[in-house]
Length: 87
Image 1 (spheres, rainbow, N blue to C red):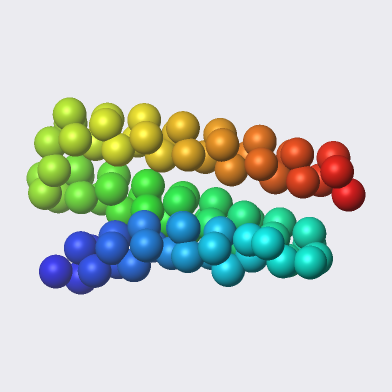
Image 2 (image 1 turned 60 degrees about the vertical axis):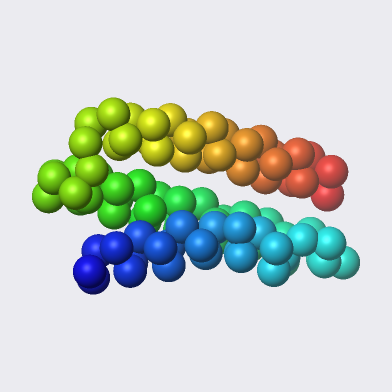
């Protein structure tokens, strides 16, 4: 139950951190939100790997989620780069 709770919290924190910084007058605050979101994503990936090791999810599910989080991670990185380039 503990791992499930941590997984839910970290995965929900990714968009929450982005929303918190979005449309702020200060780009640095948005960049900070993106950075926190990336950290929460890495935490979620860790929890997913632990879920697999404990046999809560199978390899197919793990691969699916890792692929999706990889796509999201690349989008966040590109958003971060674009914001830095425009400051």
